[in-house]
Length: 92
Image (cartoon, rainbow, N blue to C red; front, side):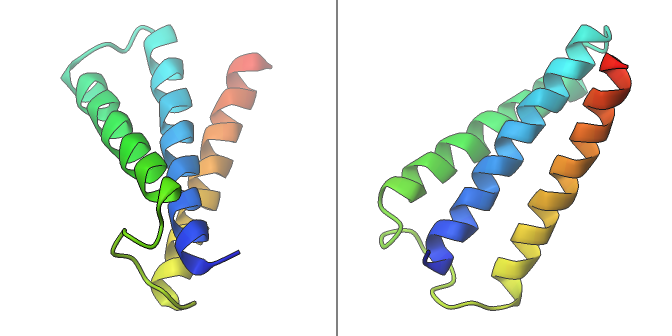
């Protein structure tokens, strides 16, 4: 896989996990301006990553494996782990 696709796939994973995080907050009754702002951010990140994944050569991202690509991958993985722990605590 090219670094461009991995970069934008990591952002898509981040957006999907953020959507799950918002759903958990709403189900717990936390509805406020912070939830609305987070939902708007999820829409923007999700839309941008889907558009960039459709044509990654047009998007301006790192074209080689470097620290930025690895940082985004690690960030998405850590956020996914955090949301998974939160989901696990709600279910159990």
